Structures are given as C-alpha cells and as structure tokens.
Image (cartoon, rainbow, N blue to C red; front, side, top):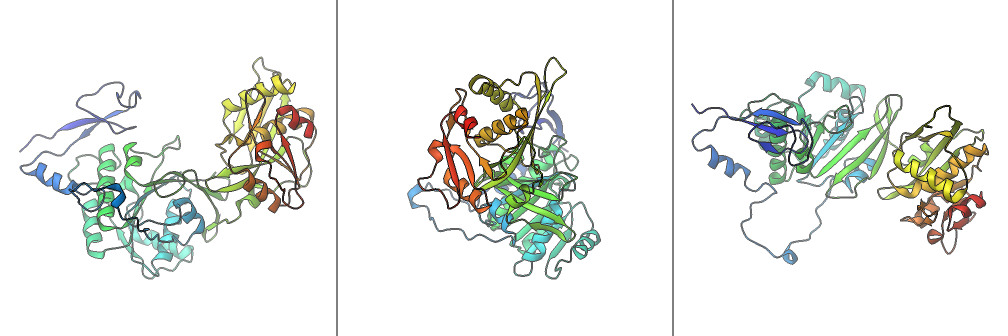
Length: 458
C-alpha cells in the first residue's frame, strides 16, 4: 500500500510547499502554512485524475480558435425573483456560473437562498443541498417564512461524490450548496473545512457546473475579520463573490458584489429582514435619509455612486475639544487615513484649524463609502460641527478634494444631481466640471472650483 503524502498549503493564497516555512513566498504572509494530508497514490490514479480535470472551463476543446469567430450569442440569464439580487449579479443568474455567497452568522445567507430556491422551484428544477441543517430544520424555516415548498428538491449530504451522483440523476438547473465548508471528498485525508477539502470540493463542484451548464450557488463562512474563510484560491475559482452584511442591531442587510465576471463590481443591493424573511428595498436612499426633524450641526447629505446607481446617504461629523496631546480621528464607513488628509487640506486651504479637536465621522445606515466623491460633503460637515452652525436640510454636496484645495469632478455627476432632485433637495454644491447646462426644475446648482469657494457658498 502506497505511503500517504502531505503538503503545506498557504491559507491565504493556496500556494503549496513540500516543507513548512515561516513565510509564504507567494503572498508574503507569515505563519499561514498548514499541513494537509493527501490521499495515497494508486496505480492509474494520475491518468484518471487528468481525465477528470479535462474541460474544466466547460466543453472540452483541443483546437485553437480565432477570437473574432467566437459566437457572441447572449447567454440567457435566469431571474432570482429578487430584483436587488439580480442587480448585484449583473442582471440575473448565468447558466454554468459559480456564485459564492458569504456573510457573518445570522446575516441571512441561508434565508435568502431558501427564499430564492422555493420561488424558483415553482418553474425550474432546483436542488438544495444542506450540510449544516437537517431536512426538518429547513422545512420548519420554510414554514415559518410562509414559502411555497412544493417542487423544491432537498438533499441532506456532505459527501461531494454523493451530491454529484444525485445531481447527475436529477439534472437541476440550479444547485445550491449550504455550505462549502461542510463538503468533503473521500480521497482527501483531512477534515471538512480544511484548506485542501474546501479547495478541492469547490473545484469539483465548479467543474460540474460548467460542464453541465448548471447554476451553482455556494454558501461560504467568514472569519472574525469579515473575510471569506478557506484558501484565497477559492475566490479565484468562482465567477462571482457576494458578501451579505448587516449589523446585529439593524434589520437592514446589504448585499455587495466583490467579484463578478458577468456584471459590475461593488454593486449594492439592500434588503430588510422582516418576520417573513428578507424583503428587497427598491429605494434605499429613502432609508438612509430618515433624518431627525430637528436641525443639528455636522449633518449633511451626500450623493455617492454604488455600482450602477446613485445613492443618497447622510454623513455626520462631531468635533469636540480634545484633552489629549494627540487628538483622536475616528471614521466609521470612511477611510480614516483620508479623513486625516482632508483635515490637513481644510487647515491649509480653508483656514480652519482642527489640530486641537477630536474628530468623529459616521456614515448613517452602516454604508461603507469607498469612493472619493464624499470628500467635499465630509469637509462641509466638519466645518458645520466646528462652527456649531446647522446646514440647510435641502442641501446636498459631492466632489473630490485635491491636496491643493481644488474640487475635482467625479463620474456620473449629472445622474447624481437628478437623483437628489427626485428626493426633494433644492440646492447642490458640486464641482464645476459636473455642473449641468440646465439644472433640474427647482434645483439650484452651485459650481465651485476651490474649497474656499465651497465654504463661501455655505
């Protein structure tokens, strides 16, 4: 009997090494190598493995073709029955694609997929594989959510070989695996959830999805840092990586695309967790604009761009005299390093000193703003709090602030102004390059070139 082999695999990038070492040479991370026992080699195993891996990306082709001769027929997408889910996916589910859905415990991953599966099963063949819950537990959840359960095929299994055998027999259009961390292959001599098991199980399931033109939906766990658990190569295998986020004290959930081969990255979908499951929010700006009736200093609405649509969110700033030698700079929902840079620009080109103030910044609703169009709104909110002067409630602002104090234009400026006008705002401070030739009815657009101009416009 052949001797079992072992390898050391990096949990961050998936690189393999024959012996342990402190640092991974590929991703340069320290103490990320873990030992993985591999299955013993058998006569003929190499040839069988090579045959099984053939045609990983779909149909097997050994001929070189010209790119211009490739058929560009549009692949029909399948609607997930959730408009917000389809938006993040880029228009719907693509046959033959592998989608990984991650999120913190209790975020609603299984709830979202169970609602999707029950609704899709009324017209299409869906196979839901549960490796964490029993069939009775899933049935109880479906009954509590008042979902139609007729037509949905269920399987409680953790063996990948058994799942593929059932999938070959049932031929589903949509295959849901909950979760990939519970799946295991018999040939891999390690526990489920390990680096080798997750990587190989995902590879086999993805290969089946592409060869059979099946939509594969995988549920993935996350670590305490909020990143997807398992090897980093897992995110490279699949076609789309989605993250469902939501605080424990909030009933709203945001679904953000981190990787998508069939649509825009950083697209955002908003859901509300209600008694009967997740319900999509078609107008998320209305949620993030639920402001207090009493005017307060340090509050301003900004227009950010999320994926393919504008979104109105409120930014709040609080400045207080610091008793420390090194004043605090705290930013929730924004880059803290960029906040420090903007405060330096405000001092140099705006003439306002904040070096003796603790600065706290918060984006209402738990939204994470990743673009630079929030710079101008952040500085105006800081000035409002510093001078204890409330800003008009009908005012919005957006624009990037440069180190020399100039206000730079941002993409899709016209659409941002139109979105603000739809929600009743009557005044906007924007970069001059983003100012429209004709402002929307009832909207006054103030175009500025420098930070000093924006401060004067207040």
